[in-house]
Length: 126
Image (cartoon, rainbow, N blue to C red; front, side):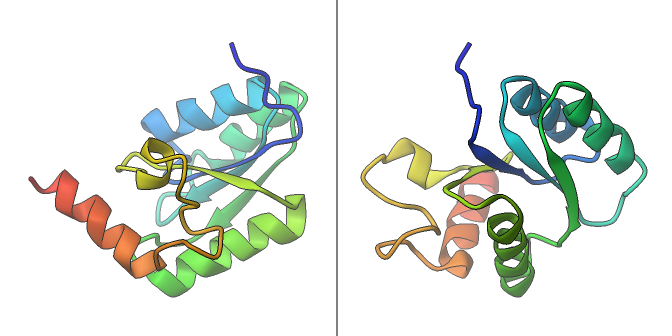
């Protein structure tokens, strides 16, 4: 497996289910993890505790990723707590990960948050 020590992962929907499993796995691989949730905070403490038990750092951040201003706040919190670069983990399509030449949301050539979310929804709804 890949070693992720010193990397920062922002995992959306990570208070339960697949998102929780991804967040914990990334923590076990050494990444510092931002545990994101929107409504259901019931599993947040367990997710953070599992990541910290693996020796990584974790914080929880409530944000609705369907709202661009909340996405920006989520990413800013991640940057201020852990630095960067950030590695988004989203159950949707991550165009920046398919196209390594593009710096999705985090660089000067990035698409806007709104445009990226529209692209994700366009694929998910097909």
